[in-house]
Image 1 (cartoon, rainbow, N blue to C red):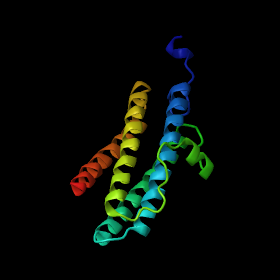
Image 2 (image 1 turned 90 degrees about the vertical axis):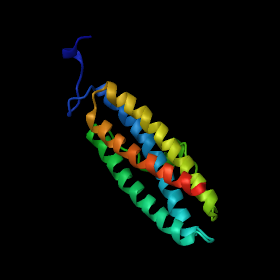
Image 3 (image 1 turned 180 degrees about the horizontal axis):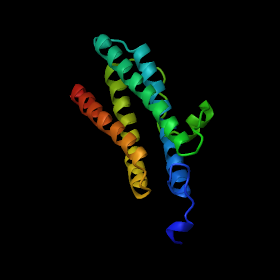
Length: 161
C-alpha cells in the first residue's frame, strides 16, 4: 500500500496507528487511576514517625497523577478516540491493583515504587509505538511523564535505603 492510500485522522496520523496508540493510552489511563487512588489512600491513612513527610509527599504525587490523568484523556481525544471513564473499565484494564489498609511508611512507599514501575514500563512501550507512527504529541507527553517518574523512583528508593 502506498502512502496516498493510507487513511489519516484529523491530526494527520495513520488512523490504524492512532487507534493502537489510543488503546495503549487507555490502558495507561486505567493504571494511572489505580495509582492515583492508591496515593490518595496512602495520603489519608499514613501513620507513624514519617507521617508528616509522607503525607505531604503522597499529596504531591497524587496531584501530579491527577494532572497526568487529564492530559492522557485529552491526548486520547486528540487522537480521535474515547478515553475509558468508568470505575469498572479502570479496574478491568489496569495492571496496578488497589491497596487496602496500608498505613506503614515502608509498605506504602514500596507500593508506590511498584506502581511507578508499571507506569514506566507501559510508557516505554507507548514511546516505541508512537515513534513508529511519527506521533510527536504522544512522544512529548509520555517523555515528560517518564522524566518525572524516574526522579520520583530514585527519591523514593533513596528514602527506602
